[in-house]
Length: 117
Length: 113
Image 1 (cartoon, rainbow over the protein chains, first blue to last red):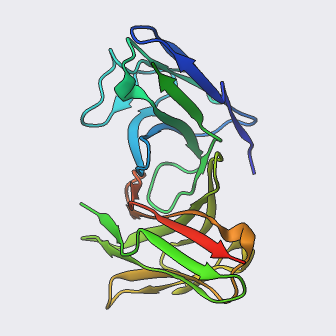
Image 2 (cartoon, one colour; image 1 turned 90 degrees about the vertical axis):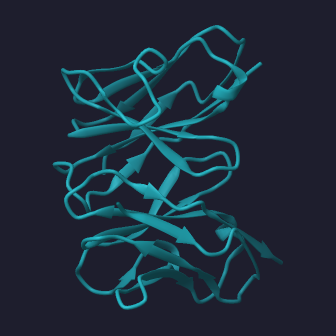
């Protein structure tokens, strides 16, 4: 199966700054997603990264705060903008090889552990 | 809308004894169900999934889960725990026509020597 990687693996940032997280899959995939895992919590879907068009955001997440790019079928970025300590979380990307229907397995990257001071 | 409830936030077992992680789901339609594991400082790894085929699903590392529609449950079991099973486990549900995953709160498994 395809291999997925994320950069950076972790970072410590100052409040008010922005961080861009990269997600790379070693083969073309249909769908890519971004999740947030707050400390001690489960995963929450931020958005679906659509190739060639604007990302689809979930309730509670907005493009100005979490701009997402997906320039091709193997790569996506998530930017966490104007960070505050509340943004300290693990950010994970995932992909699916299917057409986006239920039952498609999502494969997850190793995550980016972000700490905002 | 679909959701899952993991009935135990923490499970502690002795090495070599059985592991049972309980998950109940709520779904209006035929669900697809998954179990993922997250080891410390690692990403999520798929253990197994159910998608309306056999109700007893076998996964990796000796884990299996049984889909029981009458009980709306999808409990994860392993006959004999190993130290390497210490991790966070997530039960996940999605609808047959939807890619969005709904995660349970997670169950932390510790294994005593």
